[in-house]
Amino acid sequence: MLRNIQPETFIGIPSITNEKTLKQSIPPVEVMGEAGTVNHESKKDIVDDIFTKTLSGYTIFKDRNVLRIDYVPSRLQFRDIQISKMAQIMAPILKGQKPSNILLYGKTGTGKTVVTKYVLQKLLQRATESDVNVTISYVNARTATTEYRVLVELASSMNISLPFTGLSLSEAFDRILKHISDKHSKSVFIIDEIDFLVHNYESNMLYEMTRSNERLPHDSFVTLIGISNDIQFKDMLDPRTLSSLNEEEIMFTPYTVDELRQILRERANLAFNPGVINDSAINLCAALAGSEHGDARRAVDLLRVAAELAERQSSPTITDDHVRMATTSIEQDHIIDAVRSLPLHAKIVLLAISGQTEWNATGALYNQYVKNCKKLGIEELTQRRVSSIITELDTFGIIHAPVISQGRMGRSKKIKLTAPVDTVLQALAEDETIRLLT
DNA sequence: CCTCCACTGGAAACCTAGGCTC
DNA sequence: GAGCCTAGGTTTCCAGTGGAGG
Image 1 (cartoon, chains in turn brown, purple, yellow):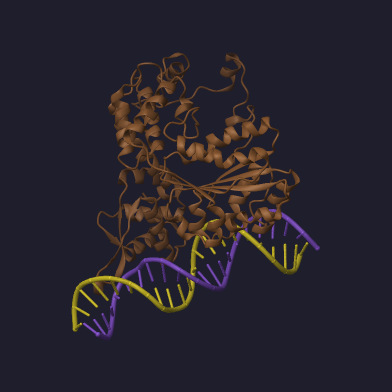
Image 2 (cartoon, protein in one colour):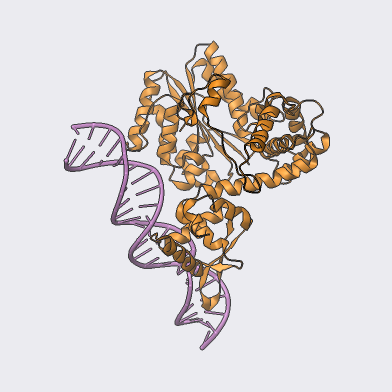
């Protein structure tokens, strides 16, 4: 959660207003030079150089924000059908009438979230002009992880404060409905990656949500927009919930390489100064992102990282090499982020896997894990739990762990690291406890 | 065809930490 | 403070699995 940081206390340095006080406040930092000698000047120069370049130097960016993941362009290309269908479905809200619930399907980076944000931004604008009280609440079920947290996030976007634990689900939902009822509000709940909610739980909460209008007075209502990457997700819903949730559905097909190219070209025109990027680099970004499943998010990400790499190298242009380097850099960052976020025991298991060069069975790996725990003086988990951790690491894509039967030798997972060992070890070494083992 | 191995993975129970209501 | 609720992590139990070997 973001905290409100006062400038006076930020990173512990008191507020400084001029050069004189700065010099008095911060003692000179001593940096060891290559030969082990104290070297103030060279380090100061490096930092100064970077800051000076940033402040006064040439930048390849005209507007960096255009390449941010949450940026909503003023014009969305190749999504006219989806935009007009969604706008038609949502339009009755401007007359105070409840629109149908909608399910949006399509793979990652096909524009589901951005189209939803685009249409609802405009809807909100028109509703304000027409004096209709519309509230829009967004939650991502993958990051919220539990039904209760989904409710907490929805509530928080309506300025309702719910404790992070302690309330029953029904009590939390009642409070949200009471707020909607008291404010005579027309509410739109957007649940992104809604399939995560159904993978992990029964769809009871979704059913409750679809029935919530029966408990609200005639001047307020809740409309649901579910967004899913998983087309099979409908099969997991019970028929009652499906019929209420799926009143309308909109499909999002992957972008073609040519469409990606045009999207990137438009973004590049907004993001960069003239002459910074050529067609070749844009084509490569489009081809790399298009080779998977027409993922526009990945294409824009590649462009952003390639540009940042070019800028760091003080290169005046973004080349194909920068795009290729961006691919590696993005993959490495994903691995490092994933490893960093693991709990301690998962890291100890991963360290055991990293130390093996061959495929290893669960039993052998568990023995190594127990040895690691003993060295650290930590109580080990059961093999059953470690088996689940191995499955989780497989899901993350850090390891590969298929179940293989070897006849009389039994049936077990065969485990091997798929991510580069160096990258994994580098990320593991960031953990102080793990460092004791390496 | 049966036995056996070394697990897998589902289900239920347990534990800890915390909030709310009475 | 008791009794209820939650999340999240873990343990315990045990039926099931698939293929090699007898």
